[in-house]
Image (cartoon, rainbow over all chains, first blue to last red; front, top):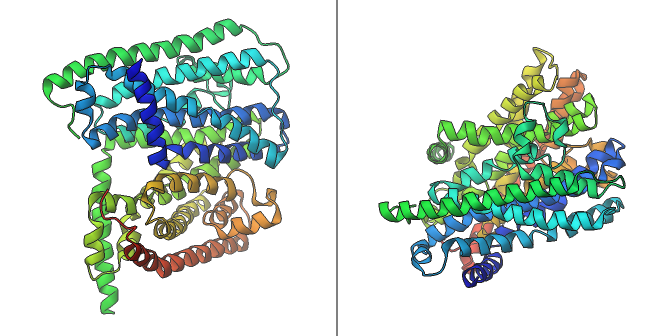
Length: 255
Length: 267
């Protein structure tokens, strides 16, 4: 727990020192404007919920993806990764603390995105199913953090984590159906989408903004939790295996 | 004349150096499975909105706009050149040399822009037919030089911004990303310029992409040649203005940084 909190504190300091980490808070409102314009221009104000949810996912995914990638890379660049791994506290807990903090900070994008929609377009986002919405947000944040831990583990081995980070944004936005539901995608892609927690989560959040009843809520929420937990389990296990291996080969700090 | 030859030589070496950087970043495998997949997904992401709206016109509009914007986005990435010169510790050498730093900066990122233009065209010609669009041949070939024009125009704009942010390397990523999304919102990429309020429409026309993209849409829609020529001319004008601004101000921004010590030479 102490390692987790230390990681969280460290991440908050990073945000202050490196404003680049705050990129999604500048881009999320712009994406909100783009999507709102798309639907307004097409005369489809009924799709406001889609435009309200997608920028939040973009912000959260960006934060998880880039911060988990950069977490390891910056430790390597700073020459501190050896000390972090050699410390008696858990390396994984420290990294998870940093990733969780980043993900929680991402909640700000909800306020921004919906604020911009209201201020510029006069669009009011109504949450018709408050409790399911809140539950989905909490589980989504946890799943996001869990998935990010898996990425962090992968980045320990990847020599160029940023190339992966730069490439893994839009493919997941499409697969996760964060703006356009998975049902609109070609049939052969849809099974792949089911393995991405974003698709379950985005569907649930959109449903919570519609007045119609939500079906199979518990199962769909369970899928978000399950896929997020899989990410966390894979991440924690791989980090353990990878650390043993790179310690043995002396490659840990190689940049 | 001698000056011109000397600048051309510096630019050529800067381009070579940039190309070597490029191959250090990407292998063919990582370009195809990393960048290319991302680019195809990005264009599809927006084109799918048209499918959601069940409108072929919207699908075409969004696909063309978001494919072409890839060229401009890549050109905007060139802003990272300034940061990397500082990161590599080569900025001091560049400043001490008798050549103009702006020539190096303007040339060093050309490969990023060229890659962006190629990717944009790849996206357009792969995804267009995949989404059921029919491009008029041979007229469609005009899209190739026009996309190059859009990329160049965005690159001139990016070089100007690179000078502005030269002293603030901590926010380079922020400026690059915010610029790309802002251009996507304001340059008629996702909605026609006529959708904007009049004042915003004028701002949009002064930015790169807008006019060139309209010329590209004209080519695809079979609009009169006069309209294509007018939009192409406007994009050329916009590109020239941004390039002139970059050439006029880059040195000043750099000297200001040297004077107040904000231009530290390594990260």
